[in-house]
Image (cartoon, rainbow, N blue to C red; front, side, top):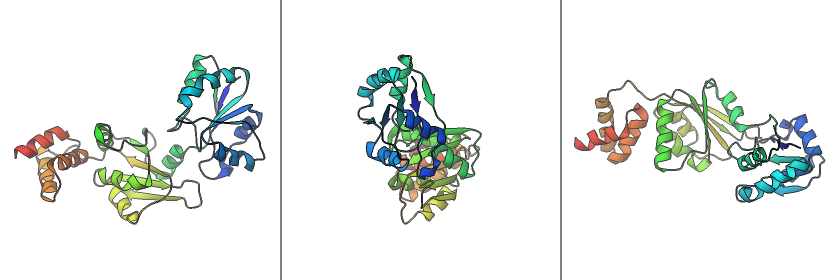
Length: 266
């Protein structure tokens, strides 16, 4: 018997596939992130199933047992919305099934990642998906530097209260698409530069957000001297040397350490 990974609608319940509905009807057990949410989905399609809560807090413990159950019965894996494993639980279960010799059947279906990418109007030939960006620290700095210098399209999930900070951390003039509440009643897709998006959402933003960013827009041909001069302007405007150096690095593609060293030495 296979483990069937089933994508579910990210908002509009009509987006579920006929194949997904058939597999749900045939499932002996449905492992899902939130039994209440999945229960409402199943009720909408006149189904009643045995549901097991399977989420980030118990997946390590439950994965081996679910893999054993998938050997003799039809187990379906769902998350709250979209495709499981994409910034959602499920990886441990898939690995446990592979190691136990259980077949994996992954169904195509709804995904906020691809929906936002297609609607963004940004190039989709080379794409980097990062999930939720780190809130702070070296990992966040490295990600932002990569976005600034790598000519790919980046897709990020972001929370409403951190969207503004992420937009402000992008190089000046970076093309973005802020995709909010995709497929839902109040869906909104804003396309423009990071600065334009900041102004557009200046009074706040609500809902689930996918941020699509055109990477590689930093001025890589700008001399280090010009970059340091701009960092000095940021310091004159009230920023600390460290913050000014980091900002200039994101905008130029030059290394932050080199900018900082030249900045503090005068």
